[in-house]
Image 1 (cartoon, rainbow, N blue to C red):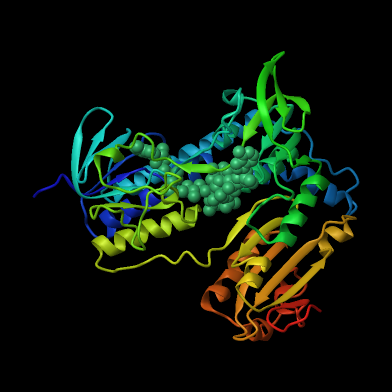
Image 2 (image 1 turned 120 degrees about the vertical axis):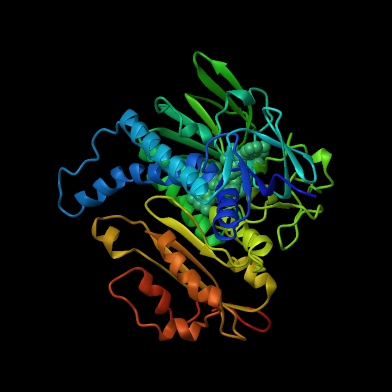
Length: 461
Ligand SMILES: Cc1cc2nc3c(=O)[nH]c(=O)nc-3n(C[C@H](O)[C@H](O)[C@H](O)COP(=O)(O)OP(=O)(O)OC[C@H]3O[C@@H](n4cnc5c(N)ncnc54)[C@H](O)[C@@H]3O)c2cc1C
Ligand SMILES: NC(=O)c1ccc[n+]([C@@H]2O[C@H](COP(=O)([O-])OP(=O)(O)OC[C@H]3O[C@@H](n4cnc5c(N)ncnc54)[C@H](O)[C@@H]3O)[C@@H](O)[C@H]2O)c1
């Protein structure tokens, strides 16, 4: 049977573009790709990139305060011009979008700038009614922000909207306590928005190490976020041009904008999956095996739509491995453990790899090397902000299982710590590494004695 393409990719985000580019550019496959919105997908257009640029922009007041502590008596962040920033941001995102498009086209990928649906196991139907056949189909449609489903829900914004605002709200409510809510609270607060955060749990960033979560929670309070724990809105109403939020504890409050950051769901709705035998997990994610292959041999899926680890580098690796395996005769599975990640808070970020202390403890014996200190840079400036570092070590093998860092540039630090940890380095090898002084990161190679030992027969110290 002959096909229009060797591969048709649905979705021009992190995973889809990488798979298309490698299949066409490196292995000479005939590749078509459909993107219904902007090339680059969530990370480039409405995620990692604009978010991180906003975190940089939002850092000015804290940097000015720190410099005042160094003797720059008049240091002040001055006036933030949102319109100017937005213009620059839009230009940068356009540049990236064009680069993604050009790189894919240069590799030989034919891009269809429209929505695609599955018509059968080898056919996609584009929004204009055109049908294209392909030997293989890759679903890389990502996820979409979830909504609360409460009365007035439609009044709330989602994360995509932050990057499109004409002006900043004076007072905003953020609902949620995960990656997005914490990063957005840091951004909004830093840009001068009165920021209230409602989170139903008792500490933000569920899933991260408990000690680090507590420090992140405290930091949000310290920088001025009005963090209200154990609270969820139960209704939103339009009131005098603002939004009135009614909470489950009976309280109410008014805001100029309400943002939901309560998680994302795989974007499998209206994708034509009913025309296939592709199987979904209960949360709508496409069920795939270790090779990213669905229940249908010709249909594969990568990235957030599979809800494995929902991070850009993971989607990219899955897309690349798929292309290597199917078109390059270089079978490659993706290891989803360990995967490092960072939450871009200010002044201190959270970087993490491997199990939390509680998870490691539940799995067996573990030695905990940890330290909490005031880094010299901010301490000199008069700040009380604390840094924490933790290494989790298997006492039997001496292998470093995990690392958690709460501190300045923790995202940069965890990337480097992730290399030896992924290689299986031992604590003795960390200790044999000469420190770089004076840095905060040197603590990672100078923690000599465990702060705690968990495990069979072990006692807490
Ligand atoms: C606010 C925010 C901040 C984030 N920050 C980070 C971060 O700092 N670090 C990190 O690693 N990850 C971050 N992420 C997560 C990261 O963006 C995702 O994990 C990543 O983009 C997933 O890539 P993907 O290829 O699976 O999907 P996406 O990048 O979402 O791409 C899917 C694409 O498919 C298109 N599409 C969907 N359906 C169709 C269809 N039927 N036809 C045609 N096209 C379709 C969409 O328009 C989209 O462009 C962030 C996410 C958000 C929302
Ligand atoms: N720095 C990064 O790498 C980064 C940044 C942003 C997003 N991301 C990715 O995007 C994903 C989505 O981010 P997110 O912050 O939306 O999700 P998340 O899963 O990190 O957090 C969702 C939060 O919303 C809360 N929640 C869920 N349902 C709720 C409800 N009905 N009412 C009130 N609260 C509710 C949860 O308890 C949780 O705290 C992340 O899991 C991550 O994979 C990564």
